[in-house]
Every structure is written in C-alpha cells, then in structure tokens.
Amino acid sequence: MTKNLATLRKAATIFTAVLTLSMAAASMAMAKQTADDRARILDDIVQAEAYSVKVSSGSKDTVYIFSDPACGYCRRLEKNFINKYAKDYTIHIIPVTIIGGSNSTPAVSALLCAAPEERRKMWKQLIQGKTMHGDDCKAGRKAASHNNQVLNNMGFTSVPTIINGIGESVPRNILGNVPKIVRWLASFDE
Image (cartoon, rainbow, N blue to C red; front, top):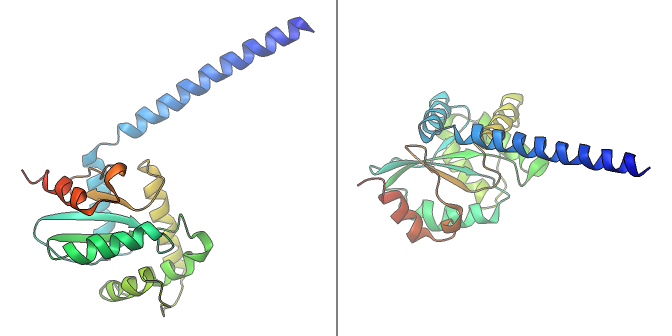
C-alpha cells in the first residue's frame, strides 16, 4: 500500500508539472498575440459591421470597448468616459454577454440584428437599462457569441475591456479612473 501511495504521489507530481508547463505554454501562446494582432482583429470586426456599434467619430484615436449591458462598471464607463470623450475618440462598442448571459443575449442579439446606423441609439437605451425594441435573430446571437469568443481568445475575462487603436489594453487597475484612462490613451499619441 505504501508503494502504491508513493507511486500515486509521483504520478501526481508529474501530472502537476505537466499541467504547469501546459498552462505556461498556453499563457505564452496567448502572450504571442501581439498588440498588432489585436488591432487587426478589432479593425476586422468593425469593418464587418456585424459585430459592433460605432458610438462616435473623434480625431484623437480609435478605442474599442468590450461591454455587456448587464455590467454596472460598463454603465459607469459609458456615463463617465464615453459620453464625455466621444468627441475626441472614435469609439466602437463590441457588445458581449459574459456577465448577463442568457439575460443579455436577446437584447444584444436584437442590437446586432439592427442596421449599423440604428445601433448607436439602441445601445444608449440598452446600456441605460431601458427597454429596447428590436428583433432577436439568429445572426445576432451568432455575432454575440463571436464577440464573447474574441474577448476570450484575446485573454480577457471581464468587462469593460478597453483597447486602443494599436491593440494595447488599458491596465485593469485604472479602469475606474477616467482621468487616468484618458492620460493612458494620450500617452500613445506622443
């Protein structure tokens, strides 16, 4: 029995080492996705017009924001950053359903089923918690699922996630501080 226990411990140690190496390899693979890769992917999403909401056309930089209408932090970001700095930045919302799940999906789907020029107004209603009128559709659900997967594939697990035009993401520790976000965005203009 002691021999079996020793064998089990050795197997557990080997398994743990292999798991650790696998996780490190996965982490390195994710890290290999460069900022340029993220910028290209996000630009492709916006160009496809099926996955995003363009909320503004500013002159300073492009900002991509993954946001879930069920996310309180996303609502605060909308109020404190997007509404105040929309004139400065071209802002694209990429709606996801990672917090609201099945509660967010019908509304996000209806939003993504709408014509691109109608989405800005619909997004404003949705993020403010108002009832949004629109038809949920299969293509919208696929788009919402796609957006969730893109967020996940980029290695992000929460919202809001803000990424600038060159693919760099806003550090999580400043997300609640709009002046720091603006300074961080401006630091790439220099």
